[in-house]
Length: 170
Image (cartoon, rainbow, N blue to C red; front, side):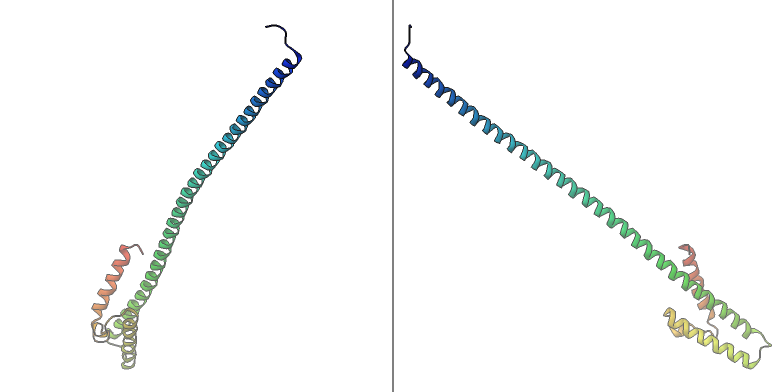
C-alpha cells in the first residue's frame, strides 16, 4: 500500500460517507421502531390497567348495590313489622274496650235491681257491640250471642288473642 490519489481518497470517503449515512439511517429506523414498540407496550399496559380498574369498579359497584338492596330490604321489613305491631296494638286496644264494655253491661244485667229500661238499653248496646265485632273481626254472627249468653266464646276468643299478642311481645 502506498500512496493513494486524491480521487481514490475522495471515492473512498464518499463510500465511507454512504456507509455512515446507511448506518445512521438504520439506527434512525431502529430507534423509530424501538420508539413505536415502547409506545405500543405502554399503550397495552395502560389498556390493561384501565380494564383491571374497570373490573374492580364493577365488582365494587355490585357489592355496594347488593349492600344497599339488603339495607333497604331490612328497612322495609322493619317498617312492615312496625306497621303490623301498631295494627295489632290498635286491635288489642279495641278488643280491650269491647271486653270492658261487655263486662260492664253483663254485670249491669246481672244486677237484680236494674230497671226494665236500663236492662233494655244494656241488651241493645250488647247487640250493637255484637254487630260491630262481627263486622270488624269477620266473625260469624251465630258464633256470638252477647244478649243470650254465649259471651264465654267471645271471652275465650279475646283471651286467645291476648295470649298471641303476649307471645309476640305486644
